[in-house]
Image: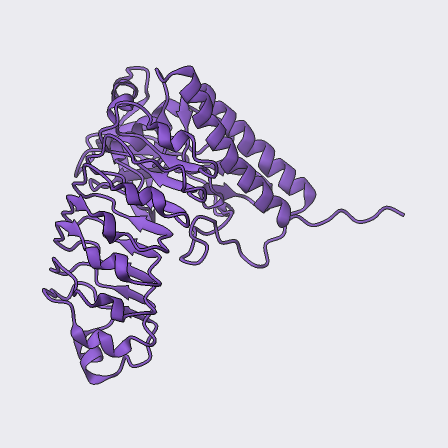
Length: 404
């Protein structure tokens, strides 16, 4: 993170990436224009900005702009004048209005999660480079025509006001990763899953909570043990805040409905009486050999995972992994769930045994009660994501030696 002193002193001259976050800024620092010939990535998140300067386009090399957690009431129209701007992040502001001219022509990645947006302009569907669109936790009930968005692969619409799965997304030819939970069309199914009396329940007081093992977008994972017998588990404490994928309640409902499968990492019990928002689950405690198959997408890859350069699987490992994940997806579909985030970074893989687990139900949607045609198309979208995974795994599989 940089400071205003860094900017004022000239220490940032020639910088491509500047972060002026959580500094209480109420006005855009005009000194940034001194970096117009170099600045490509600018992060102004966590300040008190409510507008951007009319001449922002002077930053003619700017490609990525983050202004999340600022009190904007509308997406600034000046963004549409920035010639190279392709990634925009205005998460958790107070945005109610998105003007038609606020979307730059090269837009590839738009983050408007956790705002107050009720309607999107038709111009959104006129951005053919759009690849990633994150709109969870707004007040949307319909979408503009997106037929021209032929490259749109990831779409987050969880926590809105859709009474049915929006038709425009079903027709997107490249869509592979949709998040749709927490809308009125799935609310009944989620409530039923959370209230199911058949679910195993553990009282919070029956657990001894240990060290923090990890943290994700939706929660913290701790080591824990049963007080009566010392049996160890992983304990996930959900955060109260909305995430880009949706709400903790939706994630919990999907995980509970998924049930058990040898290639899924799902809750073994709901935990009642947890501190904070009270949402917690017990998960199997994995041994230390499991690791994510890949890292999440980067700025450059946008919607595609980033694999370790030295990763190489044997043909047997690749086949075992793909068979296991395919079986997990089939199980989820049979249980009325579309995972929505079928990525290598959500697959935990044990290189020693070859065993793989699909995890993270943050983007999963319950499909009970959906029209048969809609369900079929949502599942087909999920299989498109599996095809990407399969291709990525095959590209990293060693060739069999030629027989002599």
